[in-house]
Amino acid sequence: MNADKPEHTLADFIVAARIGYLTTIRDDGKIMNRPVGIPQKEYDKYIWLITNKDSNKITHIRANPQISLSFSTDDAWVAIAGTAEITTDTAIVHTLWSPINTAFFDGPDDPQICLLKIIPSSATCWSTANGKRTSLLTDA
Image 1: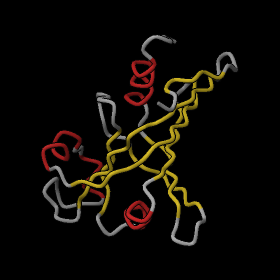
Image 2: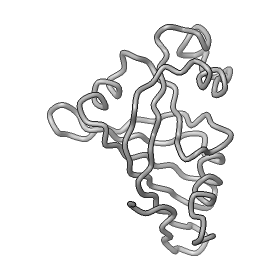
Image 3: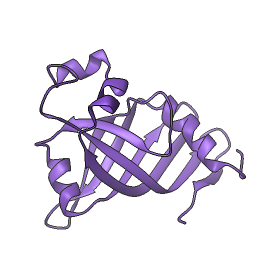
């Protein structure tokens, strides 16, 4: 792990992950977890998720943008804390679009699509190979 540039290590994990678990806070204060696809091929300091404008996660994030996103790779488990912003940037949707999204949407221009822009504030990795925990990104 490169302690001088932890975001590069985080980038490797994000690009390798395909499925994660997004945690939001419901209106009643209880937490809600659900699987999400992680479609990006590059990490630009944000994690992008394609979702439906009418989903519960959007309702939760509008009320409280604090999230947690976790995922695993073949040799590690990563937990990210941060905030989420809701956007409808069609250029980003087209960049992230893959055939799997047709199970949920009519195409990248479907009016129900929106994006979650995850802004990590901290990230921790636990290696399954050596059992060590490493901070990939710490609160500023």
